[in-house]
Image 1: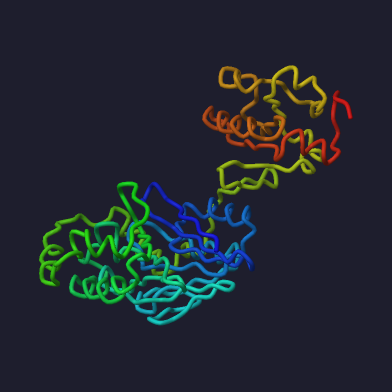
Image 2 (image 1 turned 30 degrees about the vertical axis):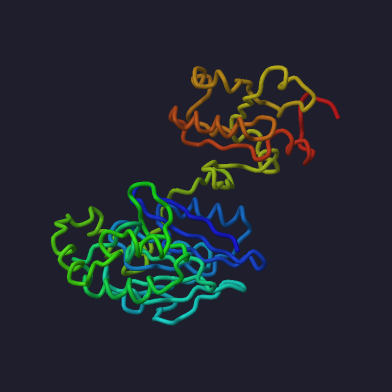
Length: 356
């Protein structure tokens, strides 16, 4: 099985990608709207087909990317039938199973943080995804969205602490950079729910937290009750239209050699190799301007900010860094030539200089 833990720094949210290595079918738990482009790039690079987005609960601190994934990639939306949300393809209940290829996640109802909280347990009980029900040495609050401390205590003790001691637990958030815990650890060391703490101890603890409501709650909850569907189905206009670009998981926009060869006059071609490489055996793209990467930051004024720029180097690494430098300098239309001059020559695109 393939597994990736993904992080949204703005909301400190963890999203989780699981996939069957044979069939390439995947599920994504708790996708974040602002990270849809990043996560879609990872799916493409790993050659995965997203079959489900799964929510652990209706979030109050970020908007889900579920609707956007369904719109762009055809995945189905699944979340708790007790969540009150509309627009899901599948409403889940305790005991349901979510298949992806030859693997599956088992649904355990774990209300208490909200009325519709779910924990997803992998088929071999080797890992579980607890959302905000159980955090690393903590738990989610219980003072809004139908939360109840007595219910949360019962959920953790009957549905999570009954898993094997070595079952890895992956939370919906962490604000200290912690990534994973285990059933055994939390049973022993969780200061709210572990050890000999009773249900009344826990209820008293939670009643006196005195927390402010999440900053994005008034935006996030209504949006998530619609599974992240934008108002009036209005899609964000943030995709570049000047070229057929691909966004990589590394955060770089790329263009393919074939398109560039057919549109050599559509952009400024910036070659960031050294001079001896520019005049070397790989040759250069006709019309390319040479500015070595080491001097680019001081020479950006030699490029026109009102025209797209495509950066190129030997294999695409230095030119990827060049796109970052240009964006920091205020250039809006920037892309990297995928594969650099090596791919350009391999696809027999036109060159100046060089030799076979």
